[in-house]
Image (tube, rainbow, N blue to C red; front, side, top):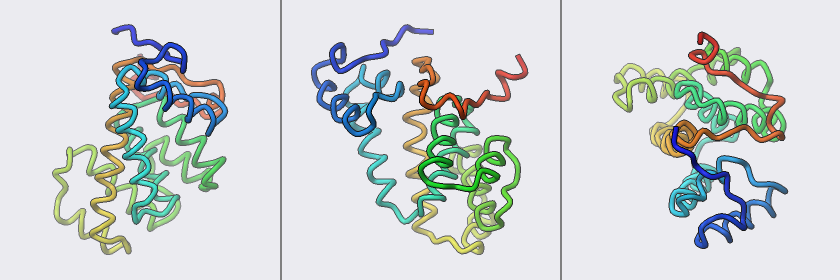
Length: 189
């Protein structure tokens, strides 16, 4: 694996220094994803911009967290599953049973959210080539065509972070270790 720096606001490229400073002010620390992404200030800015757009999307907070965890589980991104599990439980107040079901790839205990997670998984597994019946199942569960595309937006966000973490070998911050998740392929090895 290529050696990517875990940047600080002092070691980051000049274009990323201000961004890392703002992140540290907002969170009190720099999540390691951002420290790795700082190698490309544009990748870091893109992630933050897409995240901001997702927060303004038609997806409620619970659905956003369900999407981010489900996508990251499908992509086996240990960092993002851990971080979003922490955020879902501690900040978004998503039911722990829902988070655990997502982490284990099981059906969710909530029928509507289960339809949502099922659709998200189909989008990722099939690289966007989703059966019309899956779209109809999603819509019949009470979601909208706009939300179909907002799931694609969430997928774009997680593609940026999941792939960065895979390539750059992002270690989990101590702040998120209570929700550490191990990918099935890692468990099998």
